[in-house]
Image 1 (cartoon, rainbow, N blue to C red):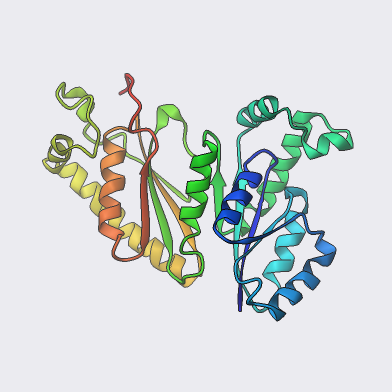
Image 2 (image 1 turned 120 degrees about the vertical axis):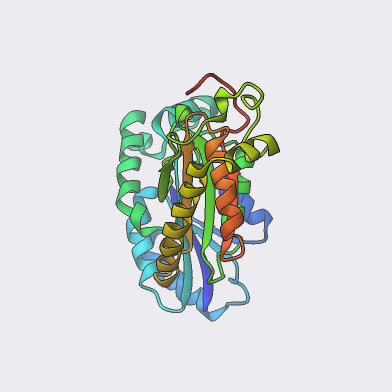
Length: 284
């Protein structure tokens, strides 16, 4: 059995950055292999597992549906598939800044048409990949850290769960498996001495611990997610993204995401991050 990471994504989403990150970690990176020769490549890899023990196969999104199907139907490999995505406004900005041409522009498409075609193809395989990662707003370093962290346990059988807090005013992440709305819970924003703190600060933690509604909410989430994680493990899922949102992503969602991480960290491999906790603004 050999381990293979399959990486694809819309053009401009960060495949090259991810490839460099894998190379620096000792992976053999094979890019843009035609689907016609993928079966022969896989057979050669299985003959030489010592040479292909850490391999990443990268394809453009237009070849991904067939490529992924070939890999999924090849025996003797343990596959981890990753799809990188980025929203259209961000892609326009990236192509303008880098002055790179989209591959489909060379075939006569306008940039907007090419981006739309990529998104259509990404939607066709989204439900069939192990990890869908939205790189919108991520720097190169953030992308490298995110993808390497999430594949750290790729060869293990344990489920990897990512808890993330966010603020609705800054947009809902598109790569969530489950999103929970925390906006109806008590809000420390209205307490002057807590307004500029976050859900990680002790005064805010004490505030939430005094609220029965918060304890009930976390208990319900714990019971529900325990069932979700159990089913996911039985189904062979490798990753789940659990996102908690409140208005500004500073208090309620931060506290709940951190609480769930503490609850589940000894039951499965867990990560926690707080996307918007360092932002400040007026919100309800």
